Length: 285
Image 1 (cartoon, rainbow, N blue to C red):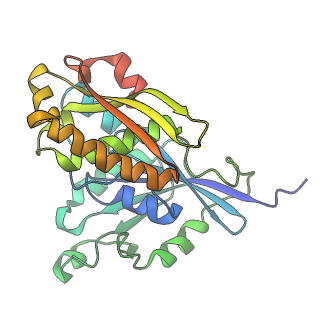
Image 2: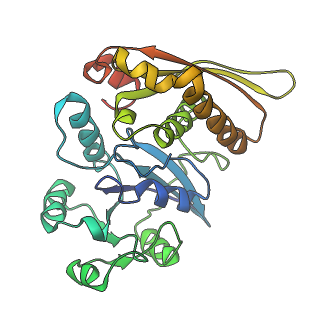
């Protein structure tokens, strides 16, 4: 029997802060990946699902590629490279203000003849000199939506006939428990000082839908050393209260439900070196 639908996977790869998560969210039409201005915001492969006519396109948002040191950072980069293994197309997303030709050359060696597009993002912020140095297939602005229709046309050329992988109403592969943990981590990264966000992750302790339709959830903000705990708490609990308030507002907007959010700070020494935690967090395979 002929397959009347199309379905394909598209990996979005690039350096940290190149706009991968912003582009994923733009194509899906809602927030599935958290976004901050700080590197290493994305820590796992997150799939966002877009439906374009008969085609279901599964975007794989990946951690930024950089010269990682230690188990944690190396695992982030390995996760990005793993995303290249079983996709139909790779989008190499370039920030014009952080461009290195050898980065693209090295990345191409990992593709093993897999189709790819070199896409210049943040075109609204780039200079003509920077643009001229980059031999890009397309220039876009994921944040402003510039030329996304052109990129969509190019993507669809690589989507094969295949049954859909997800139901029509599913937009991501991660659970609501994990998604809410990511949203809390996003707000923590936005609230905290520059170096601290890389020392934490968020785990869901409990998640329960109430009879009145609200959701009661308890999450732990986990830090890697005792000295970080007062920074999360803040003076008389002011910082954790700020994180919780902002996170609750975002979660309520995303879930369209009233949320009762409870946050706790937990210390797990050197969690970045613990294989079990990295696997549980989706950083290690």
